Image 1 (cartoon, rainbow, N blue to C red):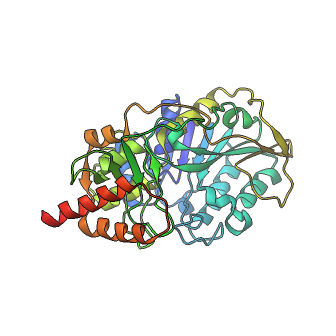
Image 2 (image 1 turned 180 degrees about the horizontal axis):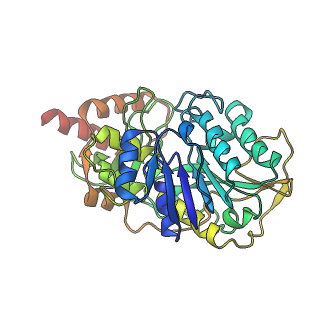
Length: 376
């Protein structure tokens, strides 16, 4: 498969597709630091502003992890008409000029509900009006061998193929048993209405806070000594949490810039799964489905083939890949720093004052961490 990547970021989609046997022909990325990573890691032309890209080469696959800035819950929520998320129209312009066999789009699940799901309606209407088949599915990166909980919507479209044979061919179902873990992830920036708790995984890595400040999550390592029990992953650990090799973004940029690149990336193993489906589409699984009427709330998975829209009952766990290492081991191998005194103190104050459920030993370790950090 020959591919073109639009809004490529640091190349998560493209790297995953290459691991499935694809070759990359062209990359497009506007942000300078991310474009520098692409030039270092891929031996292809990297162009900048998609609005200035006149055409793309004829290829099998065009990918577009278009900006989530206007669609994310932590973004501006302007919707598909926002100045950044609305740039998906530029991708459509290029696709219409030189149609590939497959199109792959990726974005946040909030696009299914924000403003009544206007973003998804706009996207699928664009494809249907031009005779394309489409299917989308919400999946979670933690089920692809990563120690990060990251829910994303993946949409595959084609004029000639059945995209259900890419996205709906695997179904592991949600796990029925709950296991204990040696480490738990949480958002230290929260604590009033939620903590983003993750059993053996971190919560979703973010490109940055509403103030544009990188805010990697924290991890509680059960039983660790004071000063090591409450930590923030290093950016190298963050790269591994997304499926890149450690050091993928290490080209001299500050850690805050690197965290933004990593937080905005597509998880590599998820893209590899997509790539294998594109290379060898199979029959969809036998799952419950029903007609999807226009105006109904967008479900977690749906399709339209030959103009027939259907809602599919599928989980966010197509695969049941086990991570090769625990979250605690990942931090040991790739680095973590103690959460700062002020960050820990602020989070603990908010958590204790809230009505949120929490483990007593977690609060004990937070207080021990505060005492330790106060003494160093």
